[in-house]
Image 1 (cartoon, rainbow over the protein chains, first blue to last red):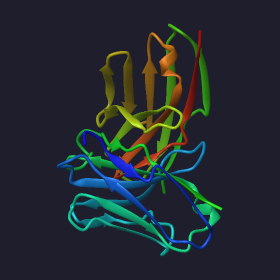
Image 2 (tube, rainbow over the protein chains, first blue to last red):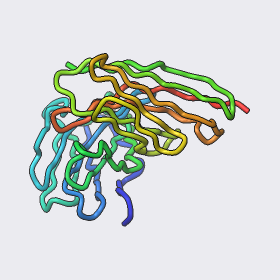
Image 3 (cartoon, rainbow over the protein chains, first blue to last red):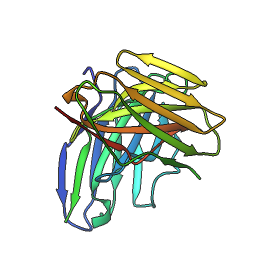
Length: 116
Length: 108
């Protein structure tokens, strides 16, 4: 596709359940980011991939959160034992190599997660 | 740590000029970006400053002073469609840190 695609767009789950959120970046983009955005706040960094490897996972809040990008394209964010505080919009963004020179990330529309 | 400050809300009339300021504190700095986000939509890139000075892109301009840890976004000839949230974001050590955003209300 032309842009960053995220699925599902909406996910409602119960406390304690396991959730997977998928991101399909722009073709050829090697840099991929996951951010989390709560209502009225700016995006909060979670993890950065360069190719297949997680170059920086310092933003993952705890060990319930995990992300993979096995073939250097699609990425999956996995959340175990969900808590109500995990409710937020999870944004994925990609960049051709890395945004240091251009400052530009291409964001998807996000996956809205609601934990009941 | 990182911190960015920007006004929470700004109101202006159609056709006017508005400036949104951003001050930051960060350990390590490569550049400052600006993003626009309409309600329920994805953040979209507007502008990036890696060096001091003014960058102009159509109706939008962005300014950076690295010595003052300060930047601003200038929007000219405001249109109703400019009503949105605007985020400044510092890029350092592989990632962007975003401010809490400024909600711009454009009135007719």
